[in-house]
Image (cartoon, rainbow, N blue to C red; front, side):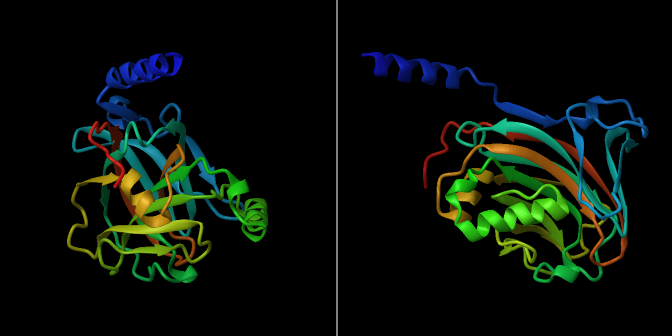
Length: 243
């Protein structure tokens, strides 16, 4: 009886959840190039110059402007998200430039004008000894290195839908959602079912998300790009299922 009551209680709580979970509503801010949005912080990598991020008005809406000149860093919001409650991410971005030397398969080409970085709260004890120690070493030199992550990226020429390991670590997967130059200088909006993407990539139930980051980087190619990021939300889906 107690178990049944707990199940009914959790079901009622789930039914009362809002349809959207706000992660980054940059459009609510006044444009101010001297500050970052609340609840967001820089995600720096040791030894690398940071990308410049600022609140900026574009086409009448406040968005995040990112300018990268041989630099690499991100903006991250640390937030717990249960993908069984909110499986779908929706975001928009605008890229002014493509990375000419970009190549998703090489360390020398591991740069993107825009990316959405999904960081999972993954228990490192699930990994083998070699992988656990590799993460410890990488964190010592680079800072933030997750045990599981998916990057939704804009690549120079790789086919949309391609999923490959990051050339620096097989713990981070790169998912191409935009490719080429046809849509440069246009606002593009995307939706991805992160729950299903994680299941397809890792063949396991996803842990909770621990953080969402936006990122523009050109440290490996030495190029310069400007990009813009719009609002980021997660959508509830009562018909999620476990495909």
